[in-house]
Image 1 (cartoon, rainbow, N blue to C red):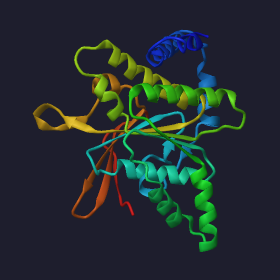
Image 2: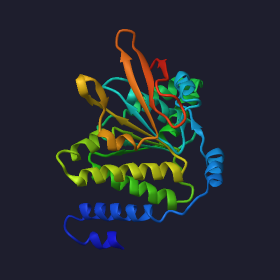
Image 3: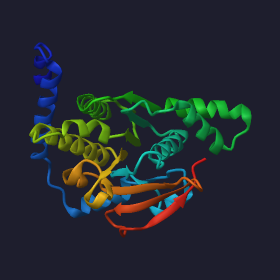
Image 4: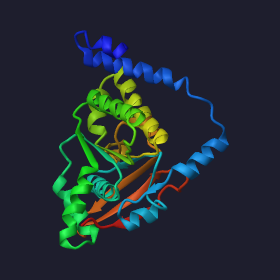
Length: 276
C-alpha cells in the first residue's frame, strides 16, 4: 500500500526505494527464532552444490558453489571473473536450472554462452541447437546500471519467487556489484552505506530462503603500500560468505583462484584452471 501511494507522488522511484529499505529493516527484527536442528536439516536436505563446469575449481570448493551462500569473485580486469560467470551460468542453464544474470556493464555475451554450451554439451550437431535454445531460455538477463535499479530488480525477483508457483531460480549472478555500489559511497554519506547494506541483506535472504547460489564480482583497488585489495571496504567484506580472488598469467594464459574467505575452508587454498 505504501508503494502504491508513493507512485502517485513526484520522485516516486527514490521514495519506493526508501520504503523497501524500511520494510527490509522491519522484517529483519521480526524473523522467527529457529533452533539448531532445523538449521542443520535445512543445510543437509535443501542446500546443495552447483558445479561451476570447471573440474579444478569444483575440487577446490569441495563440490562447487554452495546454495544458500553469497560467493564473491574478486580480481583485477581480465582475471577471469566474468568468464567463470559465463561458465557456471551455462552449466546450470544446461541442466534446466533457472539463472538470473544482472548485468551492470553490458558484459553479458550470449554468443560466448552459446560457445560454452556447444563445447561442453558433447552432443551431435543436430542436437546442439536444441540444447543451446533450451539453455538460453533458462537464463534471464537484466541490465542494471545503478543501485536503485538493482534493488528494484531484487525486490521483483523476491516477489516472483514467493508468489509464482513453478518459478525457480538456482543461480543469481551480478557482474559487477562494485560498479553499482562504488559510486554511492563517496564522502561521508550514510545513505550510500545504508543502500549497500540493504543490497547485501537482500542477496543473503534470497540465497538462504530459496536455496539459491549467488555469485557477485568485485574489482580491486590500491591498499596500503600499493598492494591490491577488494573494493567496497570493510563493511562490505562481511557480506559474502565466500570470497575468492582471481589472477591470470598472461604469458601462459593460466588462471589461478585463491580462497580469501570461506565458512569452513582454510584461507589460502588455490587452484589453477584454463578458460577455453
